[in-house]
Length: 284
Image (tube, rainbow, N blue to C red; front, top):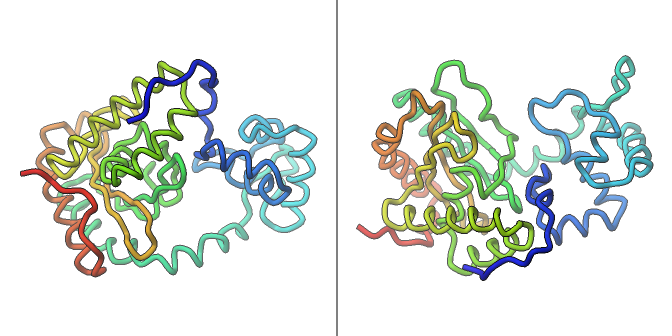
């Protein structure tokens, strides 16, 4: 792990919805294309239409710049304008940006049957997410808990406060984990870093001893989840599976019992894909 953080970074950095590290954020802001992508990344699942002021706040761009970019994105067909309220929402054209990626990524399709099976039998929500900078983005989900619909494809959650993200970190090689820790270190205040560092250490210990990370109220006090890391060698990307749901139903005892089943799901998916074994070793 890295050393003590310096008292110089504002707490707002880690709370960015973009999920970008400082270097990627800077690169995005240096070009018109990058700034346009920041606008598109500012929209999240469950958002109402957004105005230029909100987009400026979320991206850190000047309002005048945002105004020009939203007009350009509107003309290109990536945004649509709600004239009655004077705000923007994503247009269907953005689906084309991810269609090819998901179509060429076999993991979600291979994993889905097993995910549906576990969701149904365990009455839990099962998800698969891929690391994207400082975030985890869901690329597949199977909902087994009644009246639950938040965990959907496209949802982005912070890697350092979500069970699926911490499981992903726990499954990284020491070098990968060190590099990510440095990014989080640079983006956090001393108070934030103490909490993040402790969570990373705990997640790594759990993954290496039990094969999964159990997070009780990590992302939300009303949610308990467990996660199992998954390294997809052909693309060299870190992913993770999770399962859980509302804390009154998905108790620590229940989820601990489901841990081996989620591990078995990952082993099954890895076998069907013919990928290498996990980069970490579970101590039994």
